[in-house]
Length: 261
Image 1 (cartoon, rainbow, N blue to C red):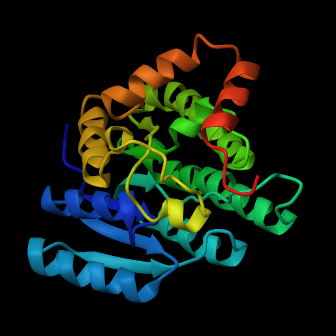
Image 2 (cartoon, rainbow, N blue to C red; image 1 turned 180 degrees about the horizontal axis):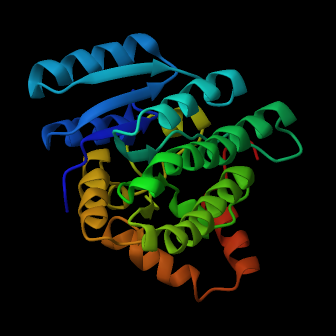
């Protein structure tokens, strides 16, 4: 496939988003990097300019906040050069649904669902008329596992999977592709932010963000609609399609039970 000329990456300051930025720059793509932390964004942008000679701009924005989200949407509406959107920003909060404040719950929905949806819509405003480009939405293996303690996160990622697959069917006839990526356990800052204890998880279940991104870009180049990176994660997904959902919820709750719950 043709190397994207200009890509926007959300959640670009760390983890999977940062790896997308680094790998795309190394392939010759210019970048618009979006995240909350301006200093980290600027540091990454300078590094990519120096190492790869790419044109890199930054937008510091908290996508939960409508006014800041609107700034990012505006860039997508006005810059028709952007031919790849990486909708990577997202997070989870650990705790029983009734015990987590509703503001924290709504924040997850605003970032994981509302922002992702609005940015995809904004990107298509230029991609569809020009019949080129694509969107990579980052979901999670949690989309297939109704897991207690992270119930809202799982629900938001299930939305991303179904939305993305349907969107791909709508847009592929217009020359625009949508890939949804469902990583398993990936070594990023996600677990720390979510306060999710992974100490009991064996080492073989983990992937690096670089591995996830490498597989994601290969799947996008092939025109695939969905990717579950890592053989171990693909086996898990197959099992989740066999086991009844109530059993899955019970099993996931036992495996992922957090201290004090």
